[in-house]
Amino acid sequence: MTVKVSDLRPNPFRKMDKYPIDKVKVEELKTSIKETSFWDNVLARRLKSGHFEIAYGHHRLVALQELDDIKEVDIPVKKLDDSQMLRIMANENLDSWKTNPRVVYETILTTKEFLNAELQKYESWEEYPPENRRVLFEGKKGDYKKARKQGVGQPTILKFLGGNWKKWVIEQALSVLKDKTLDKGAVESFPTIEQAGVFRRAIKEFKVKKKDQKEMATEIIKDGKEASKRKIRAAVRKRMIDDPLKKAEKKTDEAPDISEVLENTIKRQLDVNSVLKEIFENKDNCDSKRLKYLIMLILGGLRRIQEYVEEGDRKWKLLPQKKN
Image (cartoon, rainbow, N blue to C red; front, side, top):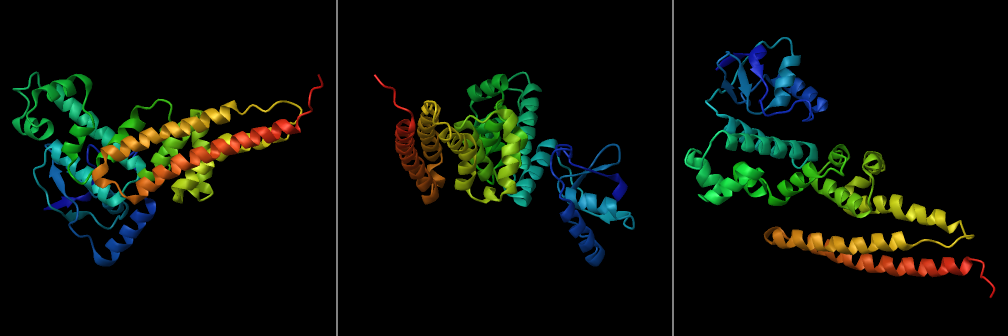
């Protein structure tokens, strides 16, 4: 169907102010369109106003809008409801952006808001669409009532989005969205959802204040340490423990306080529980890397306890000894 570019609108569930538009990608698309013309790789639905909302292809839309010599395009137009528009957008985002934290978190938030709003449209289980009862709640009236009262959780969101999405990705997104102690922008600044998760666990482990998280994330990425999960955690630890310890070494005129260091080390051991839980809940997707990471946590924690105790003993020997 031939549609005017000026009549094209974004997907209503795409938060254009929050989903990043890659300017480099837009320029590449503009060059491609100029050289090979525009192909019908944009899907849209028609509105009563006469405008057309696209389900996906927002970079192509921006590219078309910036090309003044293209006024009309031939694209497929289908009857799509809100549920289909959201699912198509979510899967397109996952495919195009892989595991970009910002896109993942905003997609999960939008999905959660949509499903909660849909639940409130119906007063009872009997009024709720049969297809949704079957797919989202597997015919369980109790789960429907709980979701309507408390809001949808990971199981319902996963059933709605489909098999391309992973349980742990949705769980992590929901945890970030509800955690008031996190600077969401700091976590989202990492390239992948896995790296964002490592940073989140590290700042929780070492009690990094919310006001310092963005600066810390910026420094880690600037130094190129975000590519390694181990380096992310090491960078946070260095800022919160190792650097303060070095400063303390210069003060031999007062007793060193290693209680906080030991407390953080013990908390590291507690973090093992969360990793164990994650492995247990995702045992079907568990691989050797996850198990190696768990072993690293356990052995690393024990090693650091020994180092801190030895370091404490050495510092005490440097102190002037009191005479009886």
